[in-house]
View 1 (cartoon, rainbow, N blue to C red):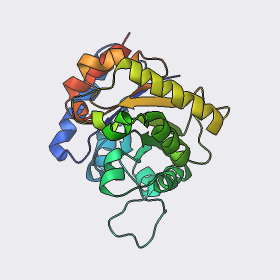
View 2: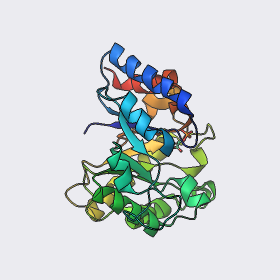
View 3: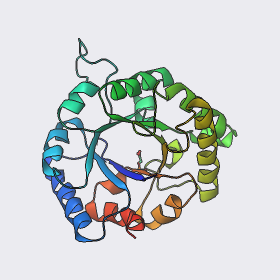
View 4: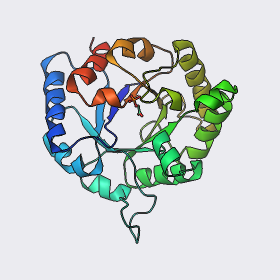
Length: 249
Ligand code: PGA
């Protein structure tokens, strides 16, 4: 299965940030091509421009959220169809920051993921436990419940990607140990075989949470880790290229 390394710019980046995407494209073109898909997910206002900038280059463009409906009286929201229309090929749904800041529940995340599929986008479905849940020994219970509740109907390896991101590792510089990552990813793989038989062994499960050039190779080598969702380190082309180095063989 071809891994995916996706950069989530979050609410960062004015138009000047597009220069980093150009540097990333140039950096990728300069050496051996990585044996993984590479994606950038900028804020909504930069999607169109980024699609234009990376046209013909080996970088996919995704969004960070979408509404479940295709259109309607939803002031300020953006539909999956709108994202597909401007050239995005994927959308992150259920990121822990949206779950926390906007009260998104598994059922909301599932509806958004199904909207993504309806529009022909790849849904990148995020799950992950908080520090408190991990300390209470609830990691597998929580991530298993989130996976079952957020997985879109009709999920296949071609249209859905899971991103396991321990909440306490996001933006903190802390990463889960490779043993902990291995345990959760193997568990999610087993759960997928129950939830989506026939697709489970091909569906990509990304790790996210303070992935950096210094730790990427080790994390990406963990069994059932099929790439990364990268926040802070995706904002600088040099850092992102450093993370991708492990996939350039
Ligand atoms: P981080 O963010 O790499 O800055 O920890 C990851 C994410 O939230 O997707």
